[in-house]
Length: 295
Image (cartoon, rainbow, N blue to C red):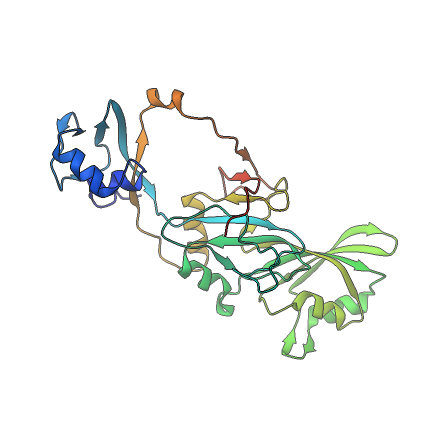
């Protein structure tokens, strides 16, 4: 990882939540801010490794990766994948964390009766690339089927059938157990047309009684992530997603890290780890229960 470009001191401190740029500029002019134990000057720039001090507290300038964010949300049945709904139904954006200077973009959609993985990102370029058919990013669903399915029906679904909006097929179908009258299958698609999984099964006279997305590309739904909770990916994980669809890495940026002796006074986080099966590429993921509703 190459070091990012120097950044103006007041901008860096404001981004870290130490005050507004205007207020910080006044404090710099008043001699209240020091950089590497020397008084800071208005307009001075900081680089990785610099030590910034203000009011007896100290921070180290570090490379933080890009400021783009991505997270996995476990969608509930009954939520709609839209930013606002005329019928005032709950939306998938209600339980997401606030994001400064950007907005969450849903990578793909799930209908109101489908639960499971929704990848959310502030990176519009990444969202467009992951949804574009030419990149052939696969989606995996767990389907509970009512009744019996014959080998011939499964073969038809893998070979392809003609739907009202063109030919379609599952790239893979794997049985996943079940009881008499209800059987589970994991199916994979390389596109995301409206209600395509349900329509494919319906073409064979088969009813889907439950549908859940468990994977989108390289991202799996963490096993311990409850419905209505979200898990944020690290900046390194975000870069992996970009690489998977052929996008260039985002530029590394600067951030501030409090020195260790100050961390004892910080409030402890109530976050819990949420590592799902087959998520070894995505480490340090945090799971969060939904806060009060925010749009």
